[in-house]
Image 1 (tube, rainbow, N blue to C red):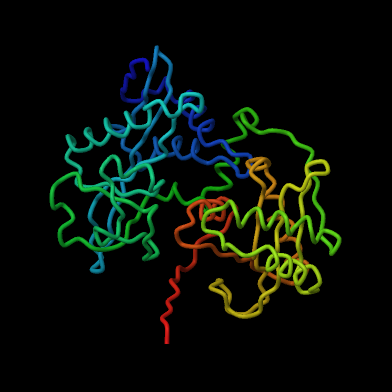
Image 2: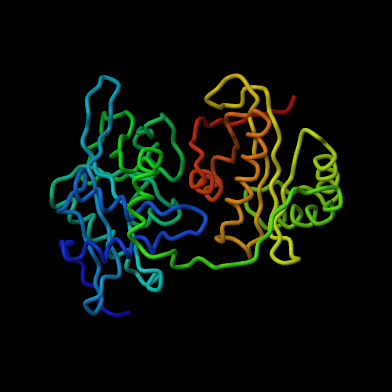
Length: 352
């Protein structure tokens, strides 16, 4: 591994950093926003003393930027803390310690500058190695009062968070709903998607003739995906048959040539299901699956749109879905598909 040099970002780096960030987060299934975040954070809320690039042989291969945030306490007082992100590494250079070097360097610099704590949202399997723990350990929630493994924090000063409780409030630029259109406009300055792969994918509404195709996909999903119910093949076959013969439910199927690539299942709900409107009908995305060979090629987003259009044609003004609290992949997919989190619930049971 060659030497990594970490230094403060300079104006001459701006375009290269935005290109790098866009490439690091490029995903054909959603519009890129992170490079727009970096651009805006330089103007407002970003901390330029904690805005670093990583270089190797004079080439920028990584970047991290911190921003101002605060804990809003119940009495209305605010405790200043840090947020960071995006953390970006050149795709071809990932898993070479660049991200770790940026994290370690920036954390030490934040301590030297006198900041008391960091809170942020990220991958819970990666960041604990730097000393982060779940935010609930500090009695801090997100802005909606929720906690989950992806919401983490760290004290930079010992006991800084003693007697501090409240909600974490980050800069508005991290709110995709507020910034989506601006991010799209900003992205038009850049070239086309770097990793998008063109495939001949077709979509159609499924019918009873697709029973075995969807059953095989559903069975494969249950056997290979984490956080997925492990139903027996016969149960899956019967469930699929019931859906395909129920006029109130619909399935869509995707093909790459003659090979099944994925499916989705949507139906209409009339009862309140944690949506913003208490009266139905609501379109409800019950199941969606894309075979690993066809992921990150826009298949899932196309299947979701078919379900949305089907729901809209039936008078729905809202589209809902759910996932397990610890299914971080599904959570990221839903948020990246335009859903917003409304509620979390834990089910309990005991034997009688």
